[in-house]
Image 1 (tube, helix red, strand yellow):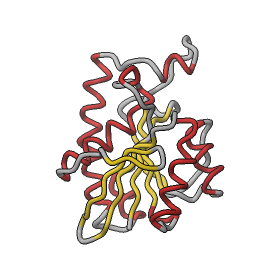
Image 2: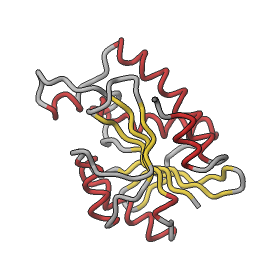
Image 3: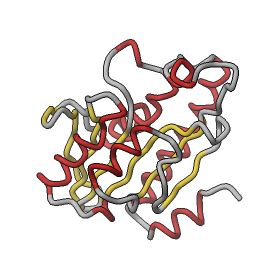
Length: 186
């Protein structure tokens, strides 16, 4: 069983913001699988489906992004999901827009949502897809990540969406090291 989590903030005011890239990607994947992420429990919206005969839970925590770990931990406990079967999709300020990176594990890199996940899971050993949103040093970080994507950024993110859907398809087909080798930029 796998848990795929998209990070973001709930509410219409946060739609199409840089911080909600994880929500956007998981919604696209759910749509491709023909499911809607509409069930609710443990302060999360989720869907259950099967990919290649394996049960998969798609999750959008509905606490603010900085408290995502609490929600994820409840789902992990309820479904008895191994840490190795968790994949988190999130925005990354340190990567330029248009760049993504697949990681087996690692530090939060200052991302408060990841810090909270690490706190509640007690480990950094969960898989992730980091999606670059760049960083504007002339703006307050909070204002920047909660800002809407520009038209130019939107075009770039639409291309990344296609890549992420391919990554997620392959996630169920190949080992994670093969996935990283195939998709990570050199």
